[in-house]
Amino acid sequence: MTPAIHVVAPGVMTTIQDLGRPGHQRIGIPVGGALDPVSLRAANALVGNVPGAGAIEILYHGPTLAIEASDVRMAFVGANAVIEILPDASASSGERIESLRSIRLQRGQIVKIGSLAGSSVMYAAVEGGFDIQPVLGSVSTYLRGGFGGFKGRALRAGDQLPLRRDSASDQADHMIEDLDISPPSRVRVVLGPQNDYFSDQGLATFLGSSYAISLASDRMGMKFEGPAIDHPKNYNFVSDGIAPGSIQVPGNGLPIILLADRQTTGGYPKIATVISADMPAVGRLRFGAKITFESVTIEAAQAAYREFAVMLDGIGDKLVPLGRTDQDLTLTLLHSNLVSGVVDAYEGALHAVRSIRP
Amino acid sequence: MSEYRVLTAGDTALVVEFGDCIDRRLSTWVLSLARALDQIRLDGIIETVPTYRSLIVHYDPLRLSATSLTSTITTLMADLRVHEDVGRKWHIPACYDPSIAPDLDYVAAECGLTPRQVVERHSGTTYHVYMIGFMPGLAYLGDVPAELVLPRRPSPRELVPPGSLAIATTMTCVYPVECPAGWHLIGRSPVEFLTRRPTPTTLLSPGDQVVFTPVSLREYQRLLGMAAQGILKIAPNEDFLGVAV
Image 1 (cartoon, rainbow over the protein chains, first blue to last red):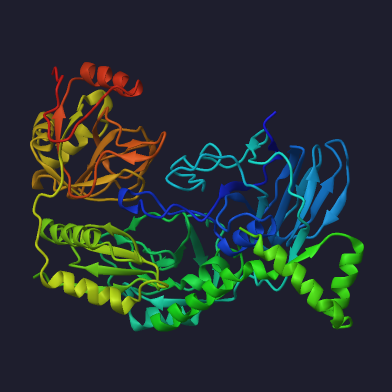
Image 2 (image 1 turned 90 degrees about the vertical axis):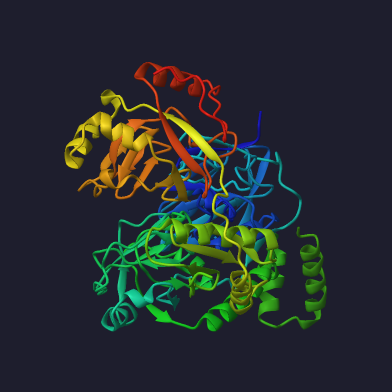
C-alpha cells in the first residue's frame, strides 16, 4: 500500500503549500505559496526536509489526520493549538503534545489539531515530504486556478496524501527554540508606487489609524475595517503590476494587503507595500486583530530583509534534540548553566546533527 | 526616447511607468523594455510583468539593489529600440450565435448597430495583447472599434462559461475558465486559452496579435468537441482552417 496520510477531517481551509512558483506572472499565474514561510521553513527543518518542501498549511482550525505508513515523522509550527495524538480511530482521547517540535508517529495513530489561537496559521510537515507532482516547479495549491498541491484544491475528508517515505529516519526528534512567530501589531511599509494618488490627509489616515482584519480576507488578500483613506484622484485607474504585500485602496477607502495568491495585475491605486521581512508575520494575522502601518525607507526595508534572510538561514541552528528523559534532563541542566562540562559534548553532538541536515 | 518614471513597489519590485492610460504606443515601450531586460539576463531579476502602461520588475534585493537595477533600466532606456510587432498573430474561431451571446442584442442597441454589424466590427479588427492578468490566461485585447466602446455591466455576473467572448471599455477578452465577469458577452470561442494539464500554459502572450474568425453554431460545437478531445490545434501565423460558416 502506498504510504499516506489519510485526511479524517479537513479543518476549514487546509492546503498543501511550499514557497510558491515565481516566474509565470507574465501569463497571469500568481506566485502563491505559504502565507507564513518562516513557520513552513521551521516545520521542514524539524523533520530534516529542505526549507521549501511542501507541507500542510492549516488556517484557523486543524484537520484530523490518520497515519497510513509504517511510521512518519511530523512537525507542527505556527499558532497555538491543542494537538492530540490518539492511538487509533476509535480512541476518544489521547496524549497532548506541544507544537514547535517533531514527533514520530506509528501506523494507525491519529493526529487531531484543534482550533488555532494567537495567530491564524500552522504548518504540518512530514519527513521526506509528500509525493505530489510539482506544477511549474511548485506543489503550492492555487485554489482559484484549480491546480497545484493535492488535486488543485483544499483537502477534504477521505483524501489520501501520498508520502515519499514509508518509515521515519532514526534521527532524534527535535524542538525549535527562540523562533519568533508572533503576529505583528505594527507592520512596516514602503510608500508607493501610487502614494501620490492620495491626499496628505489620506496618507495621514493610513499611517495614523488602527485597522482590524476583516472576515472577508482570504489567501489572495487581507481586507481591513477602519477609517477610510481619502483619495481625491479616485478616477478610473489603469491596471498595473502588483508586488507582494502591495496595499491597494479601492473606492471604499479601506486598504487590502495582497497576499500569496494575489492576482498578477490590478486596477486599484496602491498606497504602499509591506516590506518583505514583515510579510510572513502579516500572513499570521487573524480576523479581528488590529494593526497600524509604519512607513520606512526602501534602504531600511532592504536592510531589514538582509537581517531577515540571515534569520531564515539560521533556523536550523534553533533546533534542539529532544527524546529520552535523560536527554531532556541534560538540556534542562544545560539551560540552567549548571553543567558546563557537558556543554562541549552537547554542542559537538548538535553540530553533528546540523551537519547532516540537507 | 519615451518619458518614464521608476516607482518603488516595496523592497522586491520596481515599476517602470510610461504613462497612466491605455495606449498602443505605451504598450510598445513596455514590451520592448521587457524584451531588453529578458535579453541581458541580469542576475537578481526574478521576472517582469508587462501591463498596459508599465512594467513591473520583481527582483531579489539580496542579489540586486534598487539603485543598481534603476541604473540598469536607465541605461537600457537610453538606447532602447522599439519593437512594433514583436508578437505572433493568431486567428481564433469565435461564434457570435445569439444562443450563446446573451448581451449581443444589448450591445447592438446601445451602440446603435445591428447585431450583425457588431459582429462585423468586432471580427474585423486586429487586436493587440496588452497584458495577461486578473486570472491565468486572461488576455486583455485592444482596442475595440470606437463604435463598440461601452462601460462595464453595473454588476458582474457570478459565473460565465469558459470561452465566453466579452467586451467592455476599449477591451475585449475571452474568459479562459468559468469565472465571475463584468463584461458584455457577445459570443464564445471553442479554443482553450488556458491549458491546465499537465502544466498550465496559455495560448497568448503579451504583444501577440489576435483576429477573431466568425464560425457558425454548428462549427463551434464541432470545434468544441475537438477541443474536449484535445485535438483542436490552433497555430500562430496561420489562417484558421476548417471554417464552414
